[in-house]
Length: 222
Image 1 (cartoon, rainbow, N blue to C red):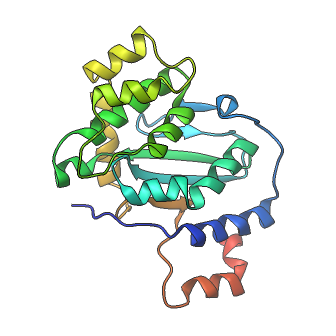
Image 2 (tube, rainbow, N blue to C red):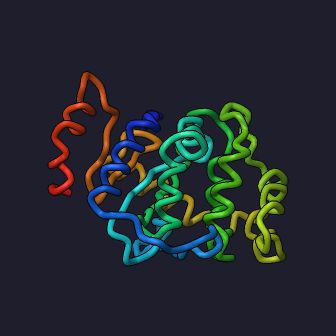
């Protein structure tokens, strides 16, 4: 069983800041609606951002995870989003749903299904932002169909027969299950887990971050 693990926002922000120094910031997309988004070739990864971005970040999340919500709304996820908007970073999302088994309910699965339905409408980025900004308490299992549709109403152009039907019928159940399997079969030990250009960035303790800051040559190894 995977265990939930939080990423320290300021730590990852510092790491991403070093990448900015290494790669530079590109001018690019102005709004979330302009950011390219697609289903990866593996059928389980949601790819967000410019294909020509200099840095690839792989992010494992569970929508019920409060540490993921903190990362996305208060931590380094905010900066990561800005870098994706600018075209400097491409993010590969793997959406897990293991907290349903740990806490009971099916909210994570429903949220992942709804996000996949939003991708089909070209609105994944915007809906992903809305869901984390309004995440129910993980113990409540609050990602119900009605809640998801209510949140979708906040994204212009998302609601419609196709999206609503996909949410109500769990149209993308196969994707949900495959994404959870991809998470379980990965090296990620919990959510959120972040990899930069294929190298996992673990929690930094006992001066580990200081070593990286003082000796930033690790960038050249990624």
